[in-house]
Length: 320
Image (cartoon, rainbow, N blue to C red; front, top):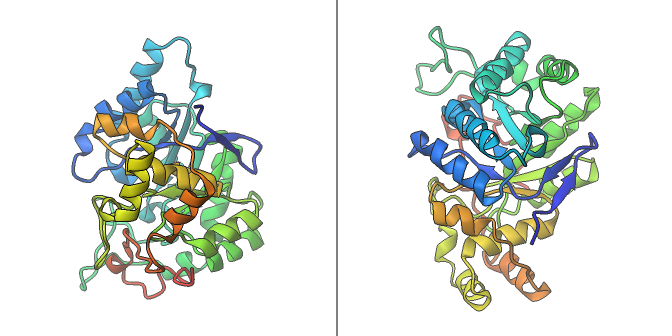
């Protein structure tokens, strides 16, 4: 079964099923995992400066293309992201150029602002930390990101990326961005899975021509927040997977694709990388049962808001 694709507001296609290259436990394994994913059939890779593995991912891309003359650069869809301390206009271009150098690419297909938060840059690089132990937020640039977005539009016009977008943006922040954007965001990459369906943000994106892209579509197996239960512990999901003769990850991927957006599961386990790419189809009843599995008890697995000295990190996203 082929990998579906979705149309971006730029006119470009994005593969529906992508491969996430982030694993904070094993950043050094990104090369082997990415190379295996490419050979397994993935053509959509999700990267970021934060992941500190772009050079390894770039090596995998380069070696894969060298070994597969039937696959060209244009057949791949590569996303990367600017981290929070690189939101000053002059830093946006520097950040994407550094990512391109590490990835060994002339352009990326999609460049994102990783979070809607601008932070102070430390003298030796990275984010500056305040006396409270939290990263220091640049409030003016956070609350008025127009200068940052103008720089994003420039790198798109300069051909360094084919599309620009955002990640972890709420409805209110998207609405503000759309008021001044000359080039609207093509995507909003956000946490989405049955335990955090993010329905309000997803629907706003659909209504405004922005494609949602789901990270942690399986429910994070690494990061948890509060009393979050890992997806693999849900009996209802295990029952559906057993009935279909597949893995729980496959039915969660199928659930996200059926909702109409791109999903980027991640795993550095080769068997799961392979199985995640093997699509299954859900019946209407199975699709509904997966969505109903949390019983209305929704939980965010990934919450970096506690690390920043800013009291409005998620804005209105709690209304989901």
